[in-house]
Length: 364
Image (cartoon, rainbow, N blue to C red):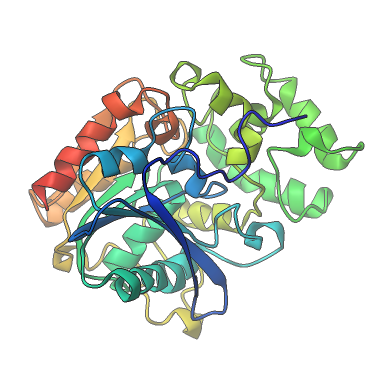
C-alpha cells in the first residue's frame, strides 16, 4: 500500500538547512542527530523522542510541528536526537539488556558532547518525551550531563506511575511475547506482515478488543503502551493521516525497557538502576532522586490531563521536587490531551507549544 507521507521524510521543516551528524557512544553504538538551522545561533534546542518513535514525531509534514515552531520563534538551530530507542536505528529489533541507564550513561552525554563539538558553547535547552524524557532526567539528575539551560520533560521524568491494567500487562506481557511466542520484539505493524505469522495473529486478536477505530497499528500501540481505547492519545486530537501512519511513526521494540519501568514501579515508584551491582554502571546513582537538590537546571514537568500511559507521574514528580527545592521546577497540565498527542496532535502549535516556548524564554 502506498504511503501518504514518505518514511523518514524531512519535508515537514521548510526554509532550514538540515544536516545529519552521526556519533558513537562509549559502549559502541552508532547514533545520530539532525540539525535544523535558519540563522547563526547563540542558543539551541535539543529534542528527544520516546521509545519506539524517532525524530519523525517532531517534524511531521501533516501539521505544524515542534521543530518548525521553534525555528519560527527565532531559535537559530534545533537538534533532534535519534538514540538507541529510535526506530531509525536497528537496536530495537534484536534482543538486548538495554535500559534507561544505558541511555543516561551513554546516549544523552554523547549527544550533548556532539552538539558542543559542532555548534560550540551554545545555551542549550532540552525538550524530551516519554522514556526519552526519563532518560534525559536520569542523565541530568545522575550527573552525566550538565550545562543545560532548561529542560522540558513530558509525561514521565523520575517517578513513574501507570494504570493498574498496565501493571498487570507489565508482569504478563514479556513472558507471553518472549517465552511463549518466542518473539524478540513486539511491532505495531504486525498486521501488515505479508504472510500469516504469530505477530499477525496476535494483531488480529488485539483488534477484536479495540472497536474504537479501524487502524490495527493503533490497536497494537494500545497493547504496547498504557491502558485505554486508545491509550496513547485522544483520537480527536490527531490528523487522520497521523492516525493511519502509526505503524511508520512508532516502530517495533523489545521489552527490556518495560522491565526497567516495572522495577521502578515495584520499588516505590523510585528512579532506581536496573542492575545496581553491575560495575559498568557504577558512575550512576542507585536512586536518581537522591541528588535532586544539587541540580540547578529548571525543569518543566509536562503532561496531558488525559494521560493513560504514565497517568499522573509528572504531577507526582513535581510534588517530590517541590519538597526538596521549592520553586525551582514547574508543572504544566495540558487539558484535553493524553500522552503522545501533546507533540503529535494537529493543533499543538496553538494549544501546546506556546506553553513550552514561554518556559524556554523565561530561562533564555
